[in-house]
Length: 393
Image (cartoon, rainbow, N blue to C red):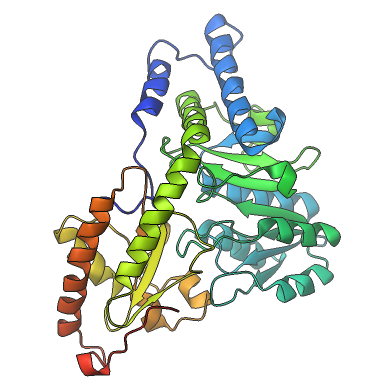
């Protein structure tokens, strides 16, 4: 029973079918002038058009990359290199993905001015702090749209408007929300937006970046000038075609699936919070339709993951990209949790193959697992008579 869709999703069989010819007969290089290359170029541009349409962009405002990590690195470093140390000031939220935060920290070490924006207990950006940084002439602000760990959805349109009022550019990592929520880059007035395929039932190894027309970034990868001179390298045509197919399927299926997943999400949250000493991380309603992040007192999140795994439930204790670090989640620390509270958190992320029967099974297995782990826990205060029944944050 897979409930780790925030880490990655299975590739839709219809996406696999669309990609298959490009591993066989249609193997041309999109930069070649022969007929094979022309066919590949046509498929590339048709795919670019599909992504642009889905996000409300113009076709030449979408470039393909190897991953969302690459796209995020390109925005921050490409902006910094373009302006230079003397003129650049980047601000990032403290709950952004590691690839954003680590890019910012690296730029900080090189001498660029970097600010880190705090959030409140639900994970929402503190706008007063943002305004202060904007008054200090920030040139680029990056804030994740739908958080990958706690699911909180930012008011990105409002943040973008604030940035533009002060002359700053705005970038959002929309990897988790793209394909779950309607996003229009023109209506929201975004300058840059990062997306990828493998979080919406497409293939791994392919990402994209929206860059508003007339904005410039210095490239990180130099070569033959592919992707409008911003990202050189022979295009991954099978992956790009798969990405486009996944997006076309999202156009038809996103709304009904989102409504169904919201119902399952709320049922799972309600049932889980009936366990003694459990708390919801993130906002109760302004969260991704598939995200459930719960913390349990007196038990380690990793232990819960392993216990559930033995019963066939595949969950997560946090972001897959940082699970090997052994450190408490920076997102949970940023919303004010103590390290021991952050370590006791568990993330369920639902998807298109999740069912009501799955929720029933989780709610049957999880309380028993928590009870068993608490009985073994050396953590202080793990006796039942010291627990409090808590169903809200």
